[in-house]
Image 1 (cartoon, one colour):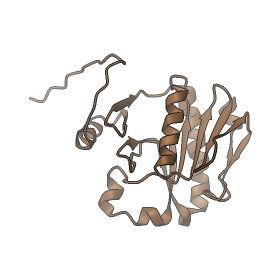
Image 2 (tube, helix red, strand yellow):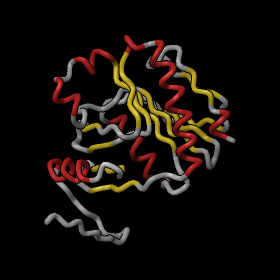
Image 3 (cartoon, helix red, strand yellow):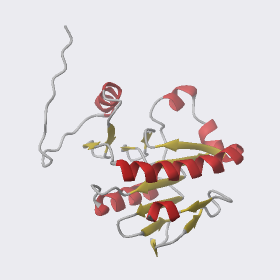
Length: 196
């Protein structure tokens, strides 16, 4: 008889898993948002509250509308999509996008599992329980692994940090919109719903 046992760990306890162990954990716990650092540390992200979920839905919807009009450019992903970064970390941005030629270069098997690349564009939305420092480190990790544009949206301070390769992080106070620049041509993210 297969029995599930629940085990609670203090937040100070670090668990390390191999890629294979991580894949098995993720498959057995599809309702959890799990990530793995490049050193193998397991990160369990709890479900977000209503406001964060509502904000993320707005962000994904806007990206999805742009994508529907620009399908030939690439593929979009929500927070349930896992990416194996070149450094070995397995990350799940809140929203992301991969250029068409990079997506099509993957085998069907690579597309079905955790995608073995870093997205070209990543977006992270800070929830009330998220550490800003940890999210900033995660954004830097995306850049170091090949992301071309990243947005860290912080509703608590009504700020956006924009990450670009070999550039200083740009911090915007209470912007009403963001441009996808040349990475997501023509995409304008409306932030008015995010700030309310």
